[in-house]
Image 1: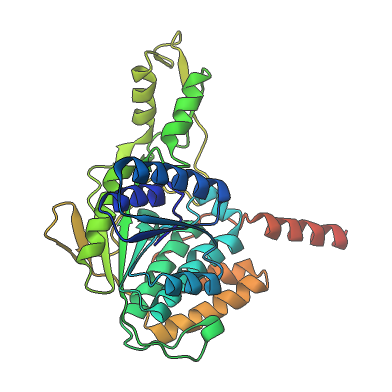
Image 2: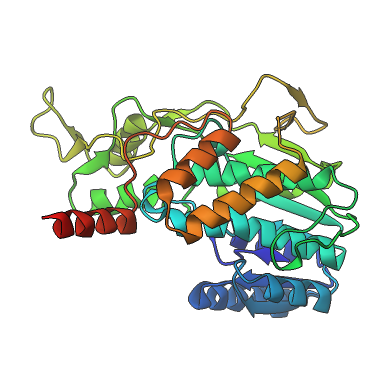
Length: 369
């Protein structure tokens, strides 16, 4: 079962999983169009290549624990690749509640459904933005990692939420795989730069010195599958992304590869201007893949195993309860405070820019006037 099966990484995971002919592959996705697209593509391939794979497209949200449990039990799912998440940094920064409910509690729901249905392997697709995050998205992904780390060390954890108070024997091996940006994914700079170049510019880069790690989508998905097979339980695997790339240099290369030149002070007659717009809320100049220095190699040269700190499950349950209460009460300063306490190195940049938080503040000021 792949959650977020219609997303960039989820879809590629599905493509590579189909190639090894499992008995059945459940495509779990909340976007009807994305689910239709990946199912249509894979079904055509299954028929063309006569692959003995049953494809099961399921519309559903990871926010719905009952739906997750019904699906996992219904098909006796053995392996879950959890790729469903909100990943766009500025968007999540402006929609805090949805980011937390989807990325943290959605992962919790999926993990607890896996425990209750006896799933053998659970692999979380994580991100380099979970390391000392400067934004809500990164901190939610780190909390999602910590939920799995905590659960993996409990032989019979007491479940959270609707099943609160119920102990569940843990037969699931939880693994996390952390990596950077993938080329051509939704929200990636590559398709954005391509569109900007096509319309004559300018090509927008937030900062002259900003860097990011990059990997192709097929390569990332393949390594996620390989790392997932290595996990012993509670492992955080980090993919070797090579050297970080300067985004300004990437923009310049893309302009040149399009047969055009960069317009600048030294070349005022150039075709395309590169415009620096400034760092957005929650955006860092550079990303990291490791929280500490405790990392060892594995049998795969591009996969490392990191030893990361975590909270015991009983403490994590308290954090989740307080976080849920703050979200339901629209108390975003409290949400930020709780995440800062729980997530090592979380350092928010700037004020809270959630749209509803700002709107409520604006109405409060109007009422005072």
